[in-house]
Length: 136
Length: 136
DNA sequence: GTGGCATATGTTATATTATTACACAAACCA
DNA sequence: TGGTTTGTGTAATAATATAACATATGCCAC
Ligand SMILES: [Zn+2]
Ligand SMILES: [Zn+2]
Ligand SMILES: [Zn+2]
Ligand SMILES: [Zn+2]
Image (tube, rainbow over all chains, first blue to last red; front, side, top):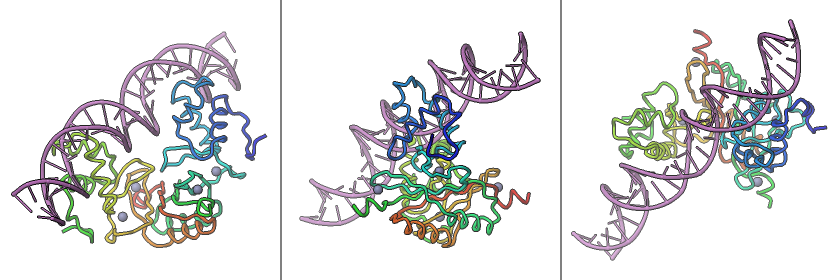
C-alpha cells in the first residue's frame, strides 16, 4: 500500500519502476538519470522513461520541475487534483518541497481575474535555501 | 532612445541585435529561432545568442520563460530590479504579459517565511487564455 | 605607448533534454 | 474472431544548452 491516497495500483511495470526510482531519490531526477538507474532493469531508451513519466505526471504521482528539467515524486498525502502546486527548491541540498495551502493559488487566481486571463495551469518554483540548510 | 528607463546603451553589437530581434517579435522566441533570424547579420553559432541573452537577462532587459525554454523582451517601463516577475502566457496567441503589482511577490514571500525558506528567486508562469483571445 | 587585464567574440565540438517514426505485443471489448 | 486501445522496444533525430580554445578589443596602470 502506498503512502498516496490514490494508490499505485494499475501502474505498468515501467511506470512502477520509474516511480520507485523517484521515490527513492532525495530530490529530483532528470529523465536521463532515471534511465541510467533503470538500465539493469532492462531500460534502454529515453522514451521508456518519458512515457512512464507522462503517465505518472498525468496521475499526479509525479511533478515536473520546469526550472530544472527534472521530475520529483509527489510527497503529499492528498495528491489528487491539487491543481496549483508551488515548489521550493534548495540551492544547497537540492531538497524539493511542495507548498500546500490555498494562499498562493488564491492570489494567482485573483490576479489572473484582474487582468482577464483565464488561468488553466500555474507553474511556481521558488529557489533559495531551505530551513534545514539555514539552520545547519 | 529606448522605451526602457535604463536605456539600451552600452550594449555590444551582438547584444543589441538579439534585443532588437526579441523586441520585434510578438511573443517569445527560442535561442535557436533568434539565431536563425540573425544568420544574415553574421551569426553562426548558438553561443553567440546565448551569451547575448545571458547579459540581457542580467540587465533585466530580457526574461527567460522556463516553461517554454524561450526568451521574451521586458515590456515594462520600470524593468530595473523587478525581482519577482509573473508571466501570463496565452495558449492561443502566444502572447506573454508581465503581471505587475506586489500581491504575488508578497504572498510568495509570506509563504516562504512560513516554512523557513530563504527565497532568492521566484519563477511564476501562468498558462491559459488571454483577455483578447477570450473576447475575440 | 606598452603591458596586463577584463570583456567580448568566433568556431568547433559536445552534452543534455525531448520527440518522431515505425514495428510489435498485450489487454480489452464487440 | 476481429478490431481497438494501450503499452512497449528500438532506432533515429530534433531541440536546447554548454565546454573548450583561440583570438580580438577596449581599458587602465605603469
Ligand atoms: Zn503533489
Ligand atoms: Zn537545503
Ligand atoms: Zn520585465
Ligand atoms: Zn491570446
